[in-house]
Amino acid sequence: MLQKLFRSAPYRNIRTIIFPYKKMADEFYDALYVSMNGATLFAPENIYSIDYAVKHLPSTDPVIEIGSFTGMSTCMLSHMLELHNRKNILINIDKWEFEEKERNYYSRVLKVSPGEMKAYVRDSFLRNVRFFCAGRLPHTFEMFSDEFFECWKQRKPVNNIWAEPETLGGPISFAYLDGNHQYEFVKRDFENVHSHLVQGGFVFFDDSAAHIATGMRDFMKEMKARKDYEVVLKNPNYLFRKID
Image (cartoon, rainbow, N blue to C red):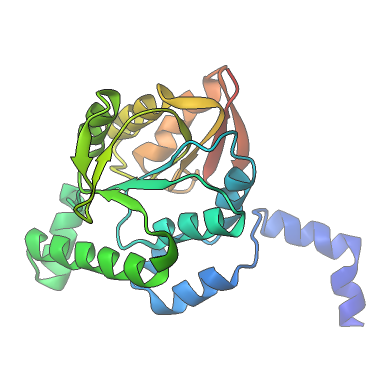
């Protein structure tokens, strides 16, 4: 009787209203969730959005991630690129310098200095990606995003975090934005990406859902007003595609 009820159209309609966002099962995510520190900060709905963008990548140009923390989103991006047999390299940027609110929080609650917390999170990232993404390590740069994009524009040769030399620059196919959440930084990160994003390319804004009070959410008003981008998903965070 209950199985028949759960399959019924009225039940499905009610469930869609209560739980409107799309999720997808992924065993790799499940394994990370129970074993990686920092994993709980990654919204499971983001898997669906990443999967959609990777499936529909318009080119083989790099995927850029701004803000990595302990590497959960990095590993999921790497996993999806591998799952869909995409040749795009994954480049991510993080300086592991926290916003003042976060620094004060860690100092007050954990009784550790910002420097100690930075070292812990950075070391966690390195350990996590080496362990969980060993077959497809990201091209990681320990920089602020403004510094990174200045090097990108100049096609400057720099060393990545693994001490390997690389020359930055060129088009971008997909950007996952999860850096500084203050409005002016979100706007600048987007503008830096926009100038290099190919037509049909994607931009994902983490923590941009309506219920999260951040500059990410506030910037969505501008994004939705643009004529050169379309909303692909609101799940609950926003995924946009460049259409012009």
